[in-house]
Length: 144
Image 1 (spheres, rainbow, N blue to C red):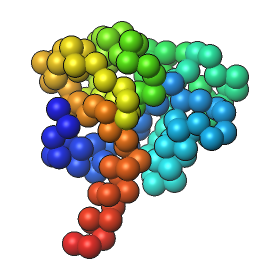
Image 2: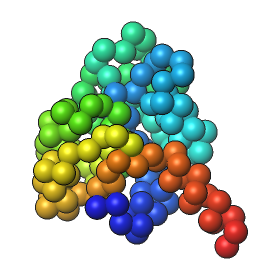
Image 3: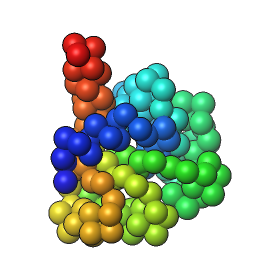
Image 4: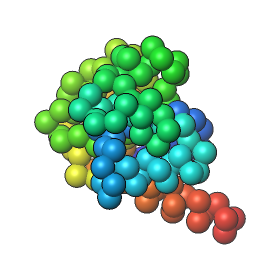
């Protein structure tokens, strides 16, 4: 978990990121992070059954990962902005849907569920911000 190689692989190869818990409320961290990722070439797939709007950042909002995957096809990474108590159910969906990577944002931690994902061959990043990781990775690439 949190291996530098996994983080680099995600940032370098992922194209489509399902953002579970993406909020349409201005100023929310999930919206800021998703907007940043979108500006850096990633396709964002909003997943939030309670979103007030049916589109966020110009993308349709889905009620579940199942619905998102059925509509968009391959999802490379699930980026989670939900409370840690919801992580086990999200991990079960990620495993069932055969999604390669799971990214749990800062403050989102569930060791047991992350262990299930890793045992199933899923690359896991936990308690890290994908925006901060991408910004650092981009800076390092520019220096090289």
